[in-house]
Length: 149
Image 1 (cartoon, rainbow, N blue to C red):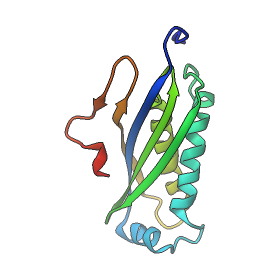
Image 2: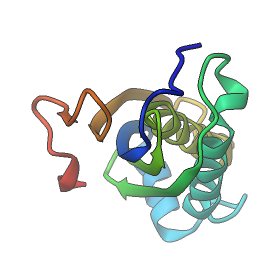
Image 3: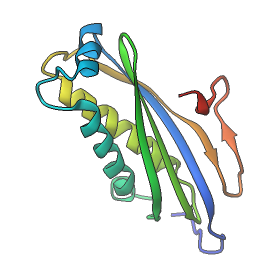
């Protein structure tokens, strides 16, 4: 585990995104609330928030830190749902892993909620889109604007 005790706490933010690819009918059912298991995006949002807070329990060398806020948002397209997770903290280390974990678990929850109608869904393109704060400064993924979600 990296020693971060000498670092000063600073505001840090990370944004991650991924997509759940699916049949157009599945995306339509999510959009109209027609999935029988319940409100897919509401459940996936809560799962993502819980996952961000539980990240140090899942990743062995990830520092526990005070998660200040977590936002999990979705964009429904014709054949996929895009997930975006944003995590903020004021701490000594970044929240990239918390954002990536929130995003992945939210996507897995969409799969779980919809698997009865579409077992062919795939989850992909999980990536860090932006991070701010800390010694390494600002990072924005090339070819994308994290603010365009």
